[in-house]
Length: 132
Image (spheres, rainbow, N blue to C red):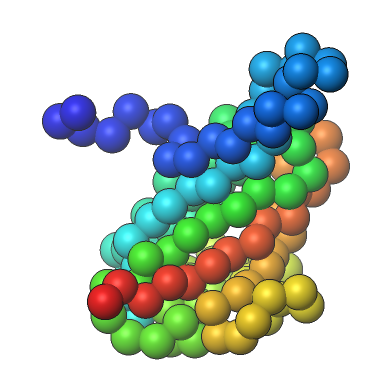
């Protein structure tokens, strides 16, 4: 593919759920983005082409949770999250800031909640993974 088509990176289907109910909707959506500490362009992409696709219902429309993976090109997970949160704050989206996860292992696991256009909010779980 020469250019991205806007599809989710990883949709997971649970075979048992499909076999029992015939449900075709993905049960978990994982969206992956490149990130780097201090890189405002990649932070914007993470929000606009990732988080906002969950907000608008383009991804995980029928779900209350979604998952994002940030591939750290440089810097630390904490530094990348600060860059993403700075982008959100600059757009008066303070309540949507990424915060340390209550269930994951720091510094890789983060969570956030975002309002949706139509329907209740969506909770996102973020994993910041260092590239070796």
